[in-house]
Image 1 (tube, helix red, strand yellow):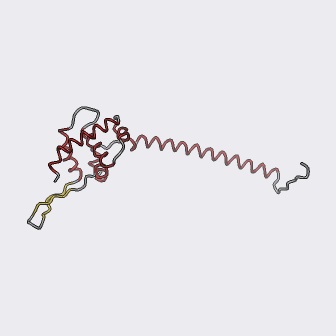
Image 2 (cartoon, rainbow, N blue to C red; image 1 turned 60 degrees about the vertical axis):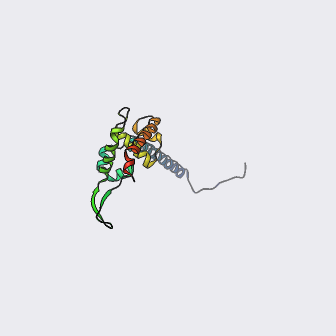
Image 3 (cartoon, helix red, strand yellow; image 1 turned 90 degrees about the horizontal axis):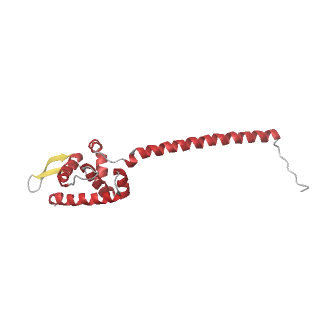
Length: 170
């Protein structure tokens, strides 16, 4: 290949300096990738240990009205008494948790005692599935039960809810 030439303003020292800078940048990037992977692993561990598989407890519901509304759909209930033909008189407003507890106490005596789930867990599983339409696999993971148990429990509680509350709904 005669007759091919190349001219540059870079000297051998300039090229060596650029190669050295490139190697330093490459090492910094490797360190940064290592740190980011470590942070990602820590965050994944934190997610798995926290909310992802957590089930809702009764204490959580007592202390957080928004959580109760989110999981159960139960809202503030106001009772009125007919004052006369045209006016109602405000009697009482119940906190959401009190309404939830009243439903729980109404349904609890008819729920079976056997199985891995407490009565509270059975009711919460029912409300969460009915309100949020979570998949059986997700609920099974949260409650550490088999997915068929989720389905069976949901239908048991649904039947009991129907029998115990149908006379209250007009």
